[in-house]
Image 1 (spheres, rainbow, N blue to C red):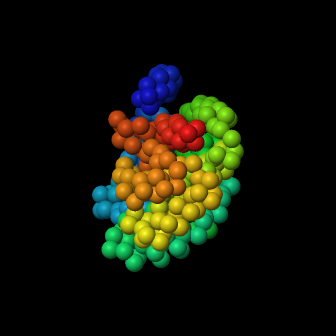
Image 2 (cartoon, rainbow, N blue to C red; image 1 turned 45 degrees about the horizontal axis):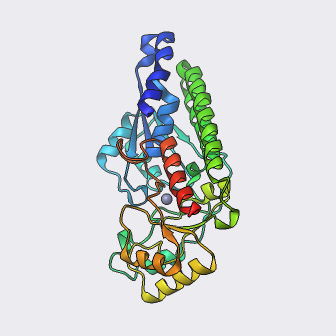
Image 3 (tube, rainbow, N blue to C red; image 1 turned 90 degrees about the vertical axis):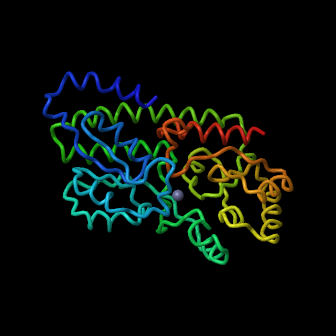
Length: 316
Ligand code: ZN
């Protein structure tokens, strides 16, 4: 889908600009979802590489010398900001990057981060706790960084990307802005489509649990409560007491579905679902695209996939 869209888009531009302008500018995006947005805006003018690729976890990412080399060659670097890529500022400094840095979240209204202290503190008591025990290893600032989960905010991100590129690359400025307005129109359609998927689901049924607390913006936009209680935010085995508390909470708060990050369905959560009456939904993509053959190879597909999974689970 992305390939079709891109090639359709490239044809008129190729005819309109001199060949020299088409030397694609080496560009680095911090993670796969952002890289997709940057490609949509940059079209043939940018050669975009992602530091954290599809299916990879930006939270526990360790940059390599090869990543510093990518940055050293880049003309543009695009980051999300809001502390999402806590490792990025140091990497940029270390690389000797001399291009233009664009922060996609700039000026966009944020939601405050939830307190994650409980899951961190808890997970360290378990043998697997340190590296995989909690959903969020990135430095959490005051603001929830997952703004791309709201397609309206994603439109603002796209405009930021386009303006950042246009301001530093006059030759292609008009092309960036044109591509951005076309892409934001697609995202506006996407937003309306998502809204329509939930229209028939009563507000009080729209309560789900996720293992990764990444959907506050999506939830705020579409009126869905996402809860990430202790016991699912840790990938380590919860205690019997935690399971009991979780089952109680799910019943008390009338939670309809549980979404567990990653493909695995821990047996304890099957048990929680069975005891609480909530169902286990399909896989949601939060911070990375899938591979090209997966269900979320680009941002639009990611939002569509997550929406189908959530709407299906809520419909019951
Ligand atoms: Zn995250």
